[in-house]
Length: 224
Image (cartoon, rainbow, N blue to C red):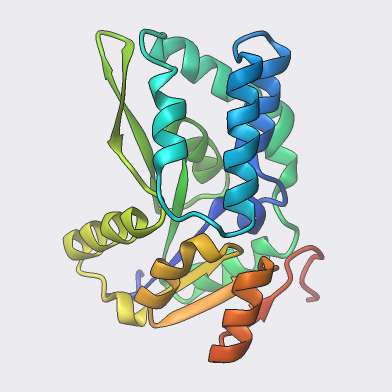
């Protein structure tokens, strides 16, 4: 039975999984000739700023999505499945399983909340049996991307997505957890009542220490 009004939200990159799916995706796109050198450099710069916690806007994501205009959504789904199977499925942080199971046993909803696209997020959400997947959604018409974002799920926008879902589900965010590694998720960490820093970046580590938030390391399986 689900515990009414409570949920645990999980970030994806470098939290639930030990890698940056965005970095690996852009590297794969470049290797397969679908990303120009300019696009690769731009992605690398934005990724560095994201990792360093120097941006909480979605401008880098919006520019990347504009480059998809006219491409087939069906092909993106197929490429995402192959990418997930080959490069992401084996990267789940070992200690994450015990945390997920603990929340399940407590009857709390478990929610994947990520700036990654739904094409990737739904795959890992299915394999790890999440109750809900909240992710970036791209606008498509007649199987072609328009170059616009239908639902941004990054920085403050991530909070808006979570709030809308919580209102619909009757969930009180003050009674919820959010697990993240990144300072870019500060707004969401501040929004829930139970923020948890998971192998945090430098800025988030300092913030968590100052505020007394739990700090966890999932790089090893939890002991029985």
